[in-house]
Length: 227
Image (cartoon, rainbow, N blue to C red; front, side):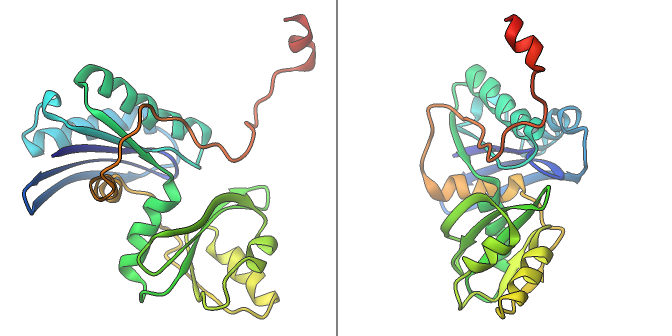
């Protein structure tokens, strides 16, 4: 199976190609940390990964993308690219949330204990989800305040990862539940997404963004009334 995976949901842009031949797996990936510019960076990364993998787009079996949460613009970029490429290549689609992709990496670095993924969603809120030691989702993702998230932590949980792990740990300490805030720079990666897609064996008819909050930009009331 040949899988192309795309992520533009947060503070990085990445593309990866996973080639499998029986038990053999070969991964070709590109990733760059960036606050903006995902739309311009994504397709050159795709082209580089595809060229390194020596694959034509017609040889793709599956195209995967993170569906959010994340920035409104970023989430749409990868999904739109995946939809367009799938239409041209007739490859199947796969999508999963960005926190689960982060958890895939975190589970490889932690000690097999349950953990939380917490991402700074701004305005004093977190994108938050809970995972077991193998990175399997237990709850979430959801948009939640750190204090509320701290009260939802299982007593055996001792670690949180992501850009919101610090505020979560501070809130947990106020509830006498010490946890370690680690991997603060962790971002979703297309490489991990490709592996998740392969392991899942699932496909989607289409991909839809996972938005946990309404957009910041809203139409002016007078404009709405004129329509």
